[in-house]
Image 1 (cartoon, rainbow, N blue to C red):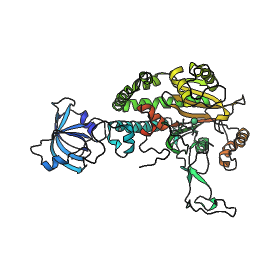
Image 2: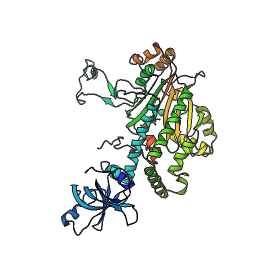
Image 3: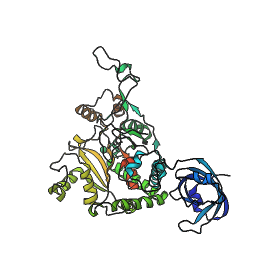
Image 4: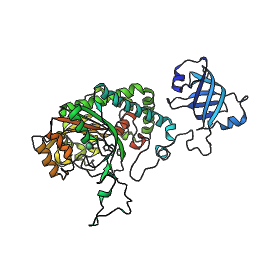
Length: 477
Ligand code: 4AD
Ligand code: MG
C-alpha cells in the first residue's frame, strides 16, 4: 500500500477507505487519540486506537516524538476539531522516543529554547510553517526569473576577491594555522597555500554575475554568501542566502522596477501557496505582540502588512530628500534616535530606515542616489560628483531588504574610484576587462533571502528563518 501524506488525507472526505499514513506523534490522549503529523501541513491527523485490542506494550510506546506507521479506515469524524479521522487497524512503531528525554513537550516553548534544539524544532507548528514558507519563496524566486528567461548562474563560493570591499572576510586555507609556512621575511607564505594565494568565502556573487550579464544580458544568482561582520543583531547572519540579478542595458529605474516586481511576485506566490501557514503565523504574531506594551505593537497584522505591501507602489525617494525628512522630524528634534541626523553624508542606521518606512511614508521605500563615500566602489557615479546610482529597498520591520545599483561601466572612472578606495585593480583585472571589451550600461541588486523570509513569516529574529543559523560564537549543528 502506498503512503498518503496527511495534507492530502485531510482534503479528502472520509468514505470508509483503507489508507496508510506515517509520521511523528504530537500527542496521545486517553490511550485512544493520536495526533499525527508528517510535516506536509500543520494540521494533525487524528488516529483512533482501540486500547482494548492494542497490546499494553505498544500503547506505552506511542509517545510524543515517536515515529509510527498506521493502516486504518478513514471515516468522517464525530468529534469536534476535525472532519475526518483514521480508525487504526494496524500500528507499527518505526522509531521510539523516550518521553522522559524528548525535549519537545506538547506545550509552548520559547523561541530561544527552540534555537538550542534547532535539530528538533522543525517538528513544531511555528517552524513547520516558517520552513514551508521559506521553501515556497525559494521556488518563487526561480519561477519569477525563469519566466523572464534569466540565466541562473552558479558563482563561486571560494573567492580571492572582496566584492564589497568591506573586509569582512572568512579566510579559506588548508594550512596548519598554528604553524603556517613562512617566507624569508617571516610572513605567511600563501604561495604554498592550497590555491597559491590568499582566499576567502565569497561575500557576494555580483562581480562574477556582471561578467555573465555581459554575455547573456540577464542573469541571476541564488546562493550562500558569508560575512564576518561582528553584528549580533536580529537581522544579521554570518552565512546567508542572497539573490543577485544582473541586467545589461538596465538603468537605475529599470533596476528598481524589477526589484519591486520580484518582491511582489514572490510574496503573492507564498501567500497563495502557503495560505494556511501564513494564517497560522499571523495568529502567532498577534499572540506574541500581546506580551508587548500597546505602543510597541504593530498597527497591522502580518496578513494586513503583506497585503499592504502588495497593494502600494513603493515610495521612491533620494537619499538627500530622506536626510531632510529625518533632520526635520520630531523624532530627531526630540533626540529619540540613538544616532541624530545632523548633516548630509552620514550613513543611515536601521532606526532611520524604519522611521522612514513605518512612521513617515508608511509603505516600502526605495532610497536612491546615496553619497559615494558610504557605498561600494562599483556603483555608477552621478554627474553631481557627490552621489552614486545606488538604490536600497527598505521594508517595514526589517529595514534594508535589497541593496543594488547601476554599475560604473566607464573604465577610467571605475579605475580612479577603485584607487581612491584602495581596491586592488591588478587582482580585479578580469572585472575591469568587461569595461574594456564591449562594456554597456548595466544594473543589478542583491535581495537578502532571510530578510525576505523574516518579512513574510512575521518572525522577529533572523535566526528563526534559516534552519541552522551561523552567528558570532555560534556554529552548532
Ligand atoms: O547591500 P549588500 O551588501 O549588497 C551586495 O552584496 C551587492 N553585491 C548586491 C548586488 O548589488 N548584487 O547586500 C545585499 C542584501 C542586503 O540588502 C540584505 O538584505 C542582505 O543582502 N544582507 C544580509 N542578510 C543577512 N545577514 C547579513 N549579514 C547581511 N548582509 C547583507
Ligand atoms: Mg547594503
